[in-house]
Length: 117
Image (cartoon, rainbow, N blue to C red):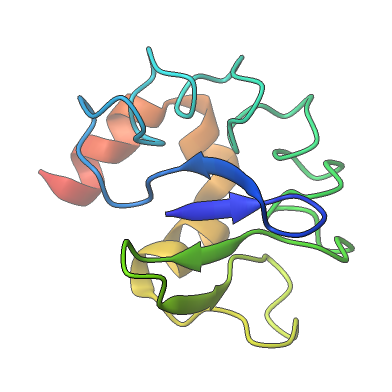
C-alpha cells in the first residue's frame, strides 16, 4: 500500500494489487490508477503525481514522498525517485516504477501487462 501526504495519512493505492482491484494503481478506471484521479500517482497535475507534486514519488525535491506499507503495518521504505532519500525502498517493483514512471504513466495498462503478465 502507498501512503502519502504531510504525515503519510493519505491512501494512494495498492502497489501490487491486480488491475481489477478497486484500490490498485494499475486499475485505470479506478481512483488510484486513473491519470485523472485526485489521489493517483499517475496524475501529473495533482500533488501526489508528476515531477512537481509536493508529495509525489517522482518529484526529486519532495520533502515528503510516499511510504510503502503492507497490510500488517510493516514499512518498506519511502517511494521516491531520490535514491538518496533517507530510508528509500529497495522493493524491485517500486524501483522499476521509479525508473520508468514517465513511460508507465502514458499507458498504465500496457505497463501492467509488461510487468505482471
